[in-house]
Length: 238
Image 1: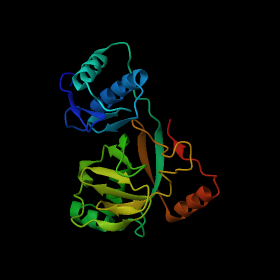
Image 2: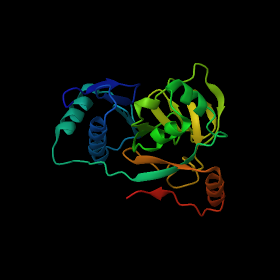
Image 3: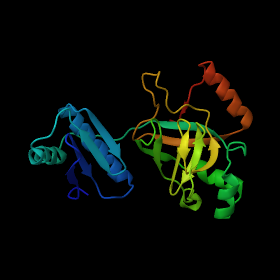
């Protein structure tokens, strides 16, 4: 892994650093450690994490690309600055009631498993947050059980509701806002994944963990009411 990084220009003011094209916690650990080193020494406009990449956005147009890359390579191999991911483990409530899980029966039929089994397989995994993208607050999660992986829809829906919990290929996620989307919807979370009015708009970050907790429709309604009254606290798992 250490000798397989590539450095590419990305527009006039950015450098794209890429790792091997795999979804791996080891790669994620390496990316976060490198990101920590970079942010301690460089003042950048933005540093964007991907499954196997870092995009460094500078505040100016890059004129000496090779010089910048030489510095970054030297920084990468420096010892003594180690960042271990100590993320928060969040328990996210999800209602899998048919009123929300509009594709649950479809997933059940195609995977030849009962709806109950689909829900069990979806909730028994501890997912890792690799990065946030696509939409503000959309968490790219690793760890979906391959037994319930299912291709995205050939024709995306024009409107997927906020909070929709869905499966697309080997990934699962929660739509933070209403949008178009082609993933298979199996439930809905009452929790807000992005709130621009908060100091930290998205509660989760790269390296955090997510567990989905199956709740009833009544519990879903109760949490919605608590959120409106600002009395709901998302649970953390120690």
